[in-house]
Image 1: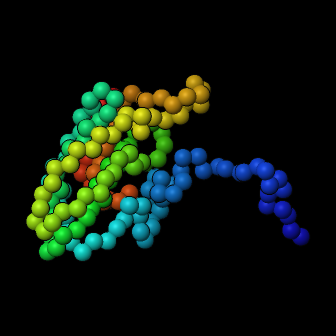
Image 2 (image 1 turned 45 degrees about the vertical axis):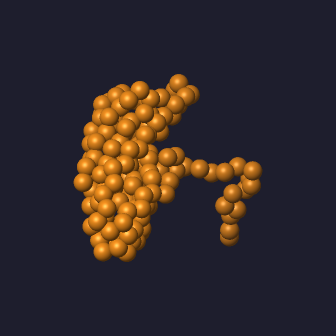
Image 3 (image 1 turned 90 degrees about the vertical axis):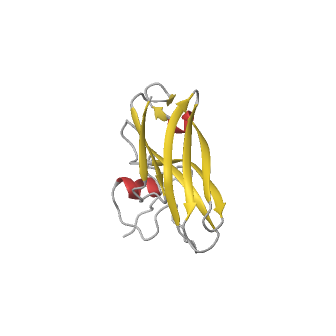
Length: 153
């Protein structure tokens, strides 16, 4: 005997909520071979400085990145956020790609809109920005410990 998996092709069965892709694997500590954001390079980089401060409707994230390898290369700077409410362990809220020559250091400013930290409130039927402590992490990929800074909203 067999049954039809989805008898109604016009209805999508969806149970994952926000826990799709890397959000699921990271939150539930499921090991993966190549984490979200993972990339290879012919050079190496050092994270020298990381700060985060709220300025109106954005978070100014300042970083300093140095190419410590033997050749020029590009790095994707990734900023993840952990929110003070239940949900994914961390979510990508900002990123940029930068190229550095051998031995070069760059200071980078990312402006992350506060709306990227919002969550959907099912009772109010709208997105809200929960009050509390947020942990921003500059990481090489979704599973990297990286460098973290806290901000309170």
